[in-house]
Amino acid sequence: MLAFYLSGAYVVVSSKPYGRPFRKGGNGRFDRDGRQGKGKGGGFRGGNSGGGGKNQTGWYKIPHGKKYDKKWLLGALQNICSVPFKPVQYHIDHSRAHFYIDDSATANALHKCTHKITDRDGYKVSVQIISHCFLLILLKVELKPEHLEPLKQCMSKRFDGSQQALDLNNIRTDPDLVSQNIEVILNRKTNMEAVIKIIEENIPELTSLNLSNNRIHKLDDLAELVTKVPHLKTLNLSNNELKSDRELDKLKGLKLVELWLNRNPLCDLFKDQAVYISAVRERFPRLLKLDGQDLPPPIGFDVETPTTIPPCKVTNLFQFLRNHFSRYYSVYDSGDRQPLLDAYHDGASFSLTTPYSTQNPSRSSLGEYHKDSRNLKRLKDSTIRYRLLKHTRLNVVAFLNELPKTQHDIASFTVDVNTYTHTLLAFTVSGIFKEVAVDAKSRESTMAFSRVFITVPAGNTGLCIVNDQLFIRMATTEEIRRAFVAPAPTPSSSPVPTLTASQQDMLTAFSQKSGMNLEWSQK
Image (cartoon, rainbow, N blue to C red; front, side, top):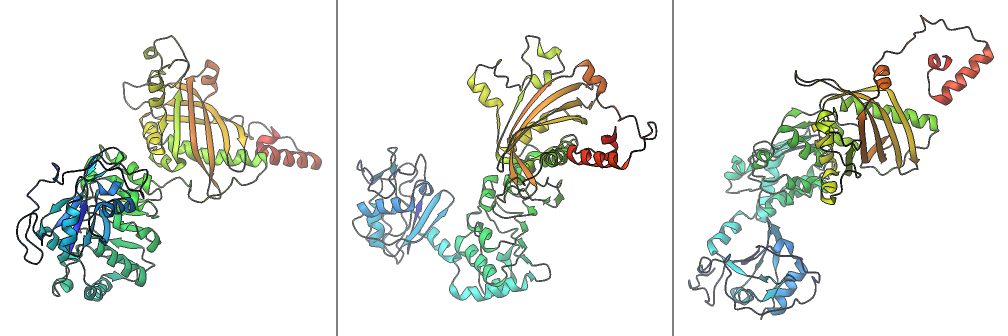
């Protein structure tokens, strides 16, 4: 049995994946990636060592096969191959797609197709041979049908029914499997497929899965967990060989609350822990624990369930907004704004604006904000305008984390609802805040803000921010005087007059309509 690898560079999927591609001819030689001569191995059944022998066998590859449509690629090969062929076990591994064929004559015919297919961008597809011994290594690690029952028994011993947890840590060295000369390597497609199938058929309610120490370098084969193990909450992928956080995109459908990724190369890519947490939580917004460390609880903005804003009276709407954004600003002022990640839509955008002024911004307390101001009256360069517009919730919250620490005066807030439908709510929040001094060099400054939020419904009681525009200016003398002042007078210092029954009814009705409590309604 022979195998073909499909890999390489500078390749784009054809816009006509099912048609016969334009051909510019070819001379059948290896390109520089082929390394001519390195792949000339002996025959699978003892053929000669030459590259063109009748019984030549090996492993062939084509540059960046992953980026080609499967039907287009196989069709293009079949169109120019001198003999018909049937690919077996076509699949993707890294940037390569590979499949097997059954005889050396077909292998020779396919080998002659090298450089005879040209993609839409004019790059030729090369067919390259890999050594025969490498193929034998692959065939050795493929699970045989008679291995499935011992594997199932091994997994049964490693399963904790009371916790619905399966521990497959370093399963390759399991004594029960080694004693039967069975090697389970979970970075091989067929091995992982066999494990997931056993889980699906026998423990579909599984909530915890440990796959640590299994040399896993990609997560394509784990993507089936999303549909076949839907109750999975805890996943341990520590001590593997994952090199990019983009691999996590393949598991985004999992509703994980605990994830282990430590001791993977991808962990070294992040400049600090906050960025690492943000990248992971972008994929798994419900995550509460990462690498054994507790994370701040997410704000309850569940964006997965399609819904509408609950119908309500205007007075209740303002109460609804006040409750949600009291929580928002309590997190914003806490010093760690990372939990706000769950308040924003995946495709959210954010912009910051300060007043247009000819004054030197460094002399103003707004200097910290001026450098990121997207005031279109001041900025004429479209490139800078685009750069200052923050896109995606990860970038939005990362930027918010860089802004000075603050304390907002909730009592100063005013809310103006601009648009209200069953699928969209736009409103403006205005008020006063001050920067909190964090060292001897900084000082507290009182400022005013106006913030326009455009939101969509999330869950049955939540909102999800899709657009956030923040305008900041210096507070006026009067605003500074009235800010952060305790409410006065109190009922004890201002006696409340006795009300008649009819006045009490009027007071109750006014309180319900205005949203004020009875004490403040009477004032």
